[in-house]
Length: 594
Image (cartoon, rainbow, N blue to C red):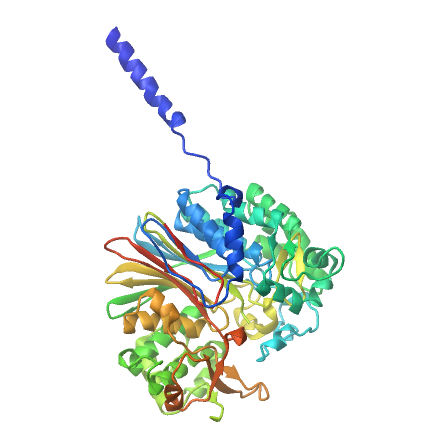
């Protein structure tokens, strides 16, 4: 009898263990981070450039391009048992709130490449723009790309036809369902807190309000959201709160993402777009689906790249450029900061991304007999032949005589070795010309310069994205997740990867190395612009610039707005598991690790 009692009591004690040792409730809200922490990280967004100290750790790391507090929110997710996806999504959501929906949006887009350590599998997720099903004549959508950076802010004809169907929130939902551990609603806590309690506008965010002051006053709801109650504009130093956004995010967190795509928000969004002449319908939102695919992969010696799968044309641009770098011999030449020849080669190679903007017939006209379909452009044999033609002088970019795509990035690695790389965007300039805001969520105008791409994609289909996101492997082991953003994202990504694969730089050296920026076009000849290479002032020796034979413009840091691509990376040592995370020098992002 005693033996039975002992066994019974022991069994009862074991049954009670889960409730006695239940996991602590997860909360990511900034008011739980510690006294003064949020204020410290918000203030860091105003620090001078360049400032990007590397972060070191062994369990987890997170980094981004903009907003230190967003990165800190991702770190909190890691520390409380979240996966790299939980951390990256938490940071991404916070970035949108801290940007006031200006350059990223909850109705924007998101791409992700993820390495799952348990299965050893790398996957690609696409939650980018869908074209509008009823938009059958996209070439008449008002707008058109301008070469001048300041001209991007000029007012133009208002049209709801410039709105596309964004998949950002569907992407957040899908990524979390596949690879998240934390409760879905907790990912929104930092964003909701920041929207409800507000944050002080810094110089850079204040510039958004100043440049878009005319457009954000057009619609009553946008004005109520982005203009102060007394009618004056927000300026640096003002406290900016977003109560409507906080309510919307709370509804999504508690009711699910259908609230945005099939519920009350969807109905309001469609009504707002249609009021401005747009053709978007509730069916467009309800039918939106996230696309999962195998990543595009390519080998370069001991290194392998796994980048976003189709229909992302950014991967085509990136792989083609690296294939050209290999075919041309650039991998074995001195760095472009030390050699005029290498500088010219890197400029020629990175300018070939313009192929993606040309119809197939035009590509064939320029390079007769060469198959330049997207699938062929991924092949090394195609790059070898293309480089031969380029050496003969057949190049897309013609240089002058010698004499818009805002985004954010987040990377994360967790304690299990999972790796996540994300870029999300509104693909326009600070809220867009129409400046439509619905219940605190901005609806951009990404169609205003992509008419040809929309026509090629067709009504109601996925619009290929230029984003370049992926994971670097060495000797078969994933070592660096990376992501890029801004107008010069292609130039910066190609150079960063060549820095690592050909020049043996680590992530910190790669992100800080001298680089060429997005070239400048002569806007006076829009049909056949002459291009000028741009570099940061003092980054290259004058002798190297002269040896290149290129027209070069050196720009001060204050003028880098539409030139600087931004690239982020986290290195994980495959033997020790030690981490090194970096953020770009000319951005407000910060790397964290523990």
